[in-house]
Length: 131
Image (cartoon, rainbow, N blue to C red; front, side):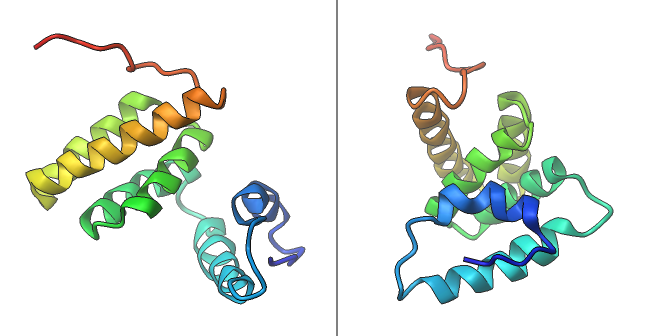
Protein backbone atom coordinates (compact mmCIF):
# COMPACT_ATOMS: atom_id res chain seq x y z
CA UNK A 1 0.00 0.00 0.00
CA UNK A 2 1.27 3.41 -0.83
CA UNK A 3 1.81 5.59 2.17
CA UNK A 4 2.91 8.56 0.12
CA UNK A 5 2.04 11.63 2.21
CA UNK A 6 1.47 13.52 -1.06
CA UNK A 7 -1.87 11.75 -1.43
CA UNK A 8 -3.24 11.20 2.11
CA UNK A 9 -6.90 11.62 1.15
CA UNK A 10 -6.62 9.10 -1.66
CA UNK A 11 -4.80 6.70 0.65
CA UNK A 12 -7.55 7.01 3.25
CA UNK A 13 -10.33 6.57 0.67
CA UNK A 14 -8.73 3.44 -0.78
CA UNK A 15 -7.56 1.77 2.40
CA UNK A 16 -10.60 -0.46 2.81
CA UNK A 17 -10.56 -1.51 -0.85
CA UNK A 18 -6.90 -2.59 -0.87
CA UNK A 19 -6.44 -3.71 2.73
CA UNK A 20 -6.74 -7.33 1.60
CA UNK A 21 -3.64 -7.19 -0.61
CA UNK A 22 -1.25 -10.11 -0.26
CA UNK A 23 2.53 -10.04 -0.31
CA UNK A 24 2.22 -11.05 -3.96
CA UNK A 25 -0.29 -8.38 -4.99
CA UNK A 26 0.94 -5.51 -2.82
CA UNK A 27 3.47 -4.20 -5.36
CA UNK A 28 0.78 -4.09 -8.04
CA UNK A 29 -1.54 -2.28 -5.66
CA UNK A 30 1.18 0.26 -4.89
CA UNK A 31 1.66 0.87 -8.62
CA UNK A 32 -2.07 1.33 -9.13
CA UNK A 33 -2.40 3.63 -6.11
CA UNK A 34 0.49 5.85 -7.13
CA UNK A 35 -0.21 5.97 -10.86
CA UNK A 36 -3.98 5.96 -11.17
CA UNK A 37 -5.12 7.32 -7.84
CA UNK A 38 -2.08 9.37 -6.94
CA UNK A 39 -1.52 10.94 -10.35
CA UNK A 40 -4.69 10.87 -12.43
CA UNK A 41 -7.26 11.35 -9.68
CA UNK A 42 -5.45 14.24 -8.00
CA UNK A 43 -4.91 16.35 -11.11
CA UNK A 44 -6.72 19.68 -11.42
CA UNK A 45 -9.48 20.34 -13.92
CA UNK A 46 -12.04 17.62 -13.17
CA UNK A 47 -13.97 16.78 -10.03
CA UNK A 48 -14.02 13.22 -8.71
CA UNK A 49 -17.64 12.89 -9.83
CA UNK A 50 -16.66 13.68 -13.40
CA UNK A 51 -13.75 11.24 -13.31
CA UNK A 52 -16.09 8.56 -11.96
CA UNK A 53 -18.51 9.03 -14.85
CA UNK A 54 -15.66 8.75 -17.33
CA UNK A 55 -14.25 5.63 -15.68
CA UNK A 56 -17.61 3.89 -15.68
CA UNK A 57 -18.02 4.47 -19.41
CA UNK A 58 -14.46 3.40 -20.17
CA UNK A 59 -14.75 0.24 -18.08
CA UNK A 60 -18.05 -0.61 -19.77
CA UNK A 61 -16.45 -0.22 -23.19
CA UNK A 62 -13.52 -2.42 -22.17
CA UNK A 63 -15.86 -5.08 -20.74
CA UNK A 64 -14.19 -4.94 -17.33
CA UNK A 65 -17.11 -5.99 -15.14
CA UNK A 66 -15.36 -6.45 -11.78
CA UNK A 67 -13.59 -3.09 -12.11
CA UNK A 68 -16.84 -1.45 -13.20
CA UNK A 69 -18.52 -2.70 -10.01
CA UNK A 70 -15.70 -1.20 -7.91
CA UNK A 71 -15.99 2.11 -9.74
CA UNK A 72 -19.79 2.20 -9.43
CA UNK A 73 -19.32 2.04 -5.67
CA UNK A 74 -16.71 4.78 -5.95
CA UNK A 75 -19.04 6.91 -8.06
CA UNK A 76 -21.72 6.79 -5.37
CA UNK A 77 -19.13 7.58 -2.69
CA UNK A 78 -17.92 10.47 -4.85
CA UNK A 79 -21.40 11.98 -4.72
CA UNK A 80 -23.06 10.81 -7.92
CA UNK A 81 -26.73 9.93 -7.80
CA UNK A 82 -28.17 6.73 -9.18
CA UNK A 83 -29.80 8.81 -11.90
CA UNK A 84 -26.43 10.25 -12.96
CA UNK A 85 -24.83 6.80 -12.97
CA UNK A 86 -27.73 5.36 -14.97
CA UNK A 87 -27.66 8.19 -17.50
CA UNK A 88 -23.93 7.74 -18.01
CA UNK A 89 -24.53 4.05 -18.74
CA UNK A 90 -27.28 4.88 -21.22
CA UNK A 91 -25.09 7.49 -22.89
CA UNK A 92 -22.15 5.08 -23.12
CA UNK A 93 -24.47 2.41 -24.53
CA UNK A 94 -25.09 4.53 -27.63
CA UNK A 95 -21.35 4.44 -28.37
CA UNK A 96 -20.41 0.97 -27.09
CA UNK A 97 -23.41 -1.06 -28.22
CA UNK A 98 -26.51 -2.54 -26.66
CA UNK A 99 -24.87 -5.74 -25.38
CA UNK A 100 -22.22 -3.73 -23.54
CA UNK A 101 -24.88 -1.42 -22.13
CA UNK A 102 -27.06 -4.27 -20.90
CA UNK A 103 -24.08 -5.88 -19.17
CA UNK A 104 -23.04 -2.53 -17.69
CA UNK A 105 -26.55 -1.98 -16.35
CA UNK A 106 -26.62 -5.45 -14.75
CA UNK A 107 -23.22 -4.99 -13.10
CA UNK A 108 -24.16 -1.54 -11.86
CA UNK A 109 -27.51 -2.69 -10.46
CA UNK A 110 -25.81 -5.57 -8.64
CA UNK A 111 -23.19 -3.23 -7.14
CA UNK A 112 -25.88 -0.78 -5.99
CA UNK A 113 -27.91 -3.59 -4.44
CA UNK A 114 -24.85 -4.91 -2.61
CA UNK A 115 -24.13 -1.43 -1.26
CA UNK A 116 -27.76 -1.18 -0.13
CA UNK A 117 -27.64 -4.59 1.58
CA UNK A 118 -24.51 -3.52 3.49
CA UNK A 119 -26.13 -0.26 4.56
CA UNK A 120 -23.68 1.81 2.50
CA UNK A 121 -26.29 3.34 0.20
CA UNK A 122 -30.04 3.92 0.09
CA UNK A 123 -31.42 3.02 -3.33
CA UNK A 124 -33.12 5.85 -5.22
CA UNK A 125 -34.15 3.78 -8.22
CA UNK A 126 -34.45 0.30 -6.73
CA UNK A 127 -38.22 -0.23 -6.92
CA UNK A 128 -39.48 -2.90 -9.30
CA UNK A 129 -41.53 -1.54 -12.18
CA UNK A 130 -43.88 -3.22 -14.61
CA UNK A 131 -43.42 -2.71 -18.32
